[in-house]
Every structure is written in C-alpha cells, then in structure tokens.
Length: 356
Image (cartoon, rainbow, N blue to C red; front, top):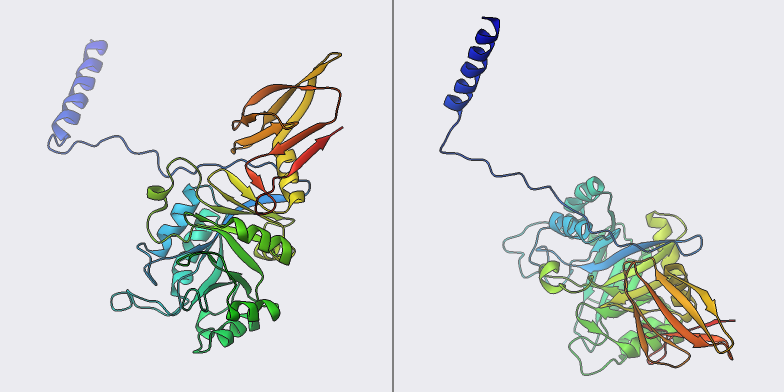
C-alpha cells in the first residue's frame, strides 16, 4: 500500500510538471559562455611576455564598435594589454556619438577590470599622411589636454604628460616608407619612442632597419576599425610582445622605453637579434638524441603557440609546428647553425642561433 501511494505521488508530481510546462516556449541549451583563446609563450628568463595591441579604434572616432566590445574582443583573442587610440582630429560619427576624448577609455575601463585586461589610456594625433603623419600618445593622463592646431605642439602636449609617442604606419597611403621633414624634426627632438613595423595588414621591412639603426622598439598593431575576427582567420591578430619584469602599466612602459618588444604578425617576428633568439630559445628545446661518426640526430620541441621555420646549416626549410616535436640530422663536422627564417632582425636579415 505504501509503495502504491509513493508511486501515485510521483505520478502526480510528474503530471503537474507536464501541465506546468509551456509547450510554446522551448529553451535551447545554454552556450558555454565567452571563451578566451590562450596564446602560450614561455617566460624569457625573468621576463613575462605580454600580448599587446596599442592601436585600435571605436565609434568615438572612425571605428565600427563600442569601446566595451574592443575589450571583450581582445580578451577572447588572448591579449593582455590594449590601448584604445581614437583620433583627436577625425571624428566622422560625432553627430551621433557624444563624448570628450577621454570617453572611450572611461567606458572601457570597468569592462577591462572585469576581464583582467590592462587598458592603457591613449589617443591618436592625426594629420595629413605623407606630410605630418599619425602618432599615438600612450600612457597619457588626459586626452583632452593634447589637441592643438600645431601638430608639433600637440605632440609636446602629450610629452608633458610623460606620454610614450608611437610613430604609426609609416608606409600607409604612400608609395614607400620615407621620413618627412616634420617626422625628422620629431626624431631630432627625441620625441618618437617607437615605430610600427606592422599596421593591420601591412608589414614594413624597411622600418625594421629604421628601428635597429635608431635603437627604437618595434610595434605590430591591428589599427582595427571593424571586427577583428573577420580580418584574421588563419593566424593570430597582429600584436606587440612586451617583455616585462612587472605585470603593470609601469612595467609595460618601462619595457617599451628600453626596447624590450617584439612585433608579430602572420607568423612573422621582428625585433633585435638578441630578443628574437631569446624568444626562440624560450619556446624551442633542441637536444641531440643520436650521435654517429658522420652525423648527429636532434629533437626539436616547440612549447609555444607559434610555428617556427628554420634552416639547419644552410639546408632546406623545416617547420616546427606549435606544441610539436620534429627531428633533424646534421653533420657533426661543424657547429650547428640554425637560421630562423620567420624572424627578421633587419630589413632582409634573419637571426642565427649557433650551437657548439
């Protein structure tokens, strides 16, 4: 009898549940939520490697998206640091989007804090390309205090806030990479702290040489106006890898001021030879696994998210895919020389790792 009553209760509860359901509204399975794509780069000695984009735009200048979207997008893409650098002089949406030059940062900052993303306050000084040029002012305090009719004074105003001044896309909208009279004036006054060797879909090999000769850090930035995921489908977005002692804005700025940056785009890396070799050795373990009278066999293990392309002792091209191991053999009659073909330390020069 007790078992019968229990079954009746279960049946009544089940019937009530069925009756209580709204058959005209069916819930689909919930999505798993936002997912971050982790980009794995081992520490380089005592330095942590941060993935950064110091040049992006929103609807508050000529971009297509809201500032908070830029934060979500960067977090999903595995970045650690971004700067929203909306133009001061070019505001095509100002009829519809109101706010001062600090508004994009103020809107994005709470979202950045929520995601644990470092947001650097910045803006872009925008004048005629090929004559004056475009310059990002990073680590500023107040974007509203920068504008001036005289572009040199505008850069000076940024400097008064201890801004890091970045020379943007030297080759964009012009036939080749040349330094104009105004830009040379900034160089002569030590008012340029770094240069983009990559901007969006453009790579400027000549500018790699500029940075080496002028001892300035190299940058790769997306300069994104639209949707990142629509532009980069087969590789990571452009990013500036910054080697920091301290994971903070002061740590990032200190690293940039002394030149600890590596530009990345489309599985290419640009920087000084020393930094490129440090990155390669942090990511790739090479060890001899077999020795004979004529040749040695080596294993090569890649611990990072990036592929590397190498040539051993001047031989053919070998690819080391991410999180993979390859083997190669080499004559033991001479020291091992590994040329890293997807790294550039000058306009047409690759770093070479020599192993005794």
